[in-house]
Image (cartoon, rainbow, N blue to C red; front, side, top):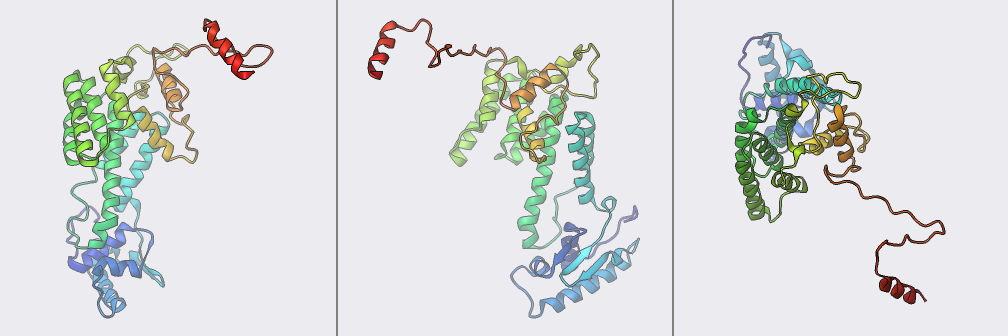
Length: 346
């Protein structure tokens, strides 16, 4: 607090403080505070016990630098802890996550990544590790862990799009071990290994994913994971890192592509990356907000929207209907087959 380390209260007061800060700038109902403090073992008079605990908490906070005890407000519905975003790591984390989303939507992936690095640096140890509350460790802690993992996933995507695959392989290996059921980490690890020239290891990770998912859940890898495996086996050129293909690339007007703007390739992470941003927009079909530069970016947007074919597979010419209407005849079809059809129609 105010740049100084302070000794926070323990026991029920610590649990109460954690509950209020987890819902900062919002009213926490009395019933939820009862569950957070005592779970299903409420005292005979929980309202009186809560008031006593709150009074002691305010006394402890009054003795800390900055005297934040006045930030706790009482209302008929419960209690509210008013705090600025710069004074609480959780709010700062969410604010920097939003900054990252905005930068990514504008195509500035370097700024987006830097904002994520700053957000993730605020996680110094496991959340609520020193708070004794089954209620908080149930739903809220699961939600916090999910927020943290999503931030890590977004940073991995940005690292891949910016050509940092070799730097993230070790971290991805640890993440896969700690979160074996989280398929996206396996996806990014397979891709990073392939881009780093370690195709054999990439295929081993894919086989490990198949074994784990089948033994634990009885399912196969997702369509994206299978498509990535097929692309590796076929050595699809679209898997080449964006940073390797960006050198010498120019815009249609001849200007050089800015190094701060990454070129999304039609494969890597594009579907998941655009999917993450799609879910944060009101229009689920709007992919134009990802302002990707160059031909590869246009192919990525088209492919993510489902209106492009894989590279190297030209779209077949459309068969035109004859002027008189009816179905178009198939050139080269056996005359016998056409005769049989005409007989059946009769």
